[in-house]
Image (cartoon, rainbow, N blue to C red; front, side):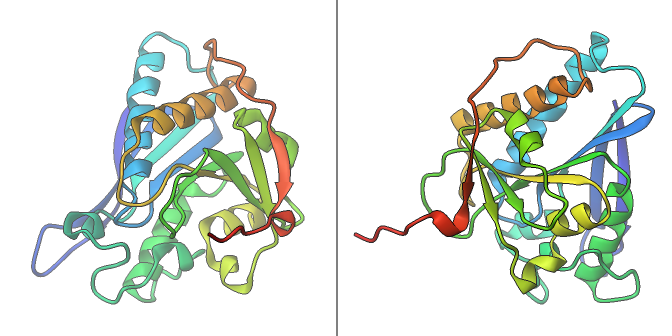
Length: 242
């Protein structure tokens, strides 16, 4: 395991802003996993911490396939997390609405640009996402209909269902959308509501991610087969109000 500083931004009033990544194996860029993009995504950062621990153990035992590289970025917004805000503390902008970024632009645009530079070129991309509404969520995979999506690959996570949706105009500046445009098979794995850690669902998502990697020969380990994932179209869902 290699722990790397992917981006550093000096601050005049506090410690430097840092984005750290954990790299496993070497060779082909096989899969990149991104955790908390927002300050209240505690579950997403927790899931990535469990993945880092498990992958470190697998690497020690020689179970990461030769010629494959894995990158895990647990948090892309530690400043907001430190003060309990969802978005960038200074101007309330969302890093996940700034991709592919602009290295000479506003702060969040520069963060997105630096992050995307490290994330380009991977065969698979997994973002541990959250939903802005509170509630109980069954762990599932979300995909945008961009013309590059592959629902059969999404079913490899073995989660109960895969939700396919048509992107809206503001979705074109998200990490998931840009990953797909730059020829990475991208998946958003819904990992629970913001502001809470749910160990049970985190365990399911870690297992699903390891299952996906084992299915594609990135790691060598035995995993539970999971669910037969059903593909649902968001437009077919009905909101039932109390």
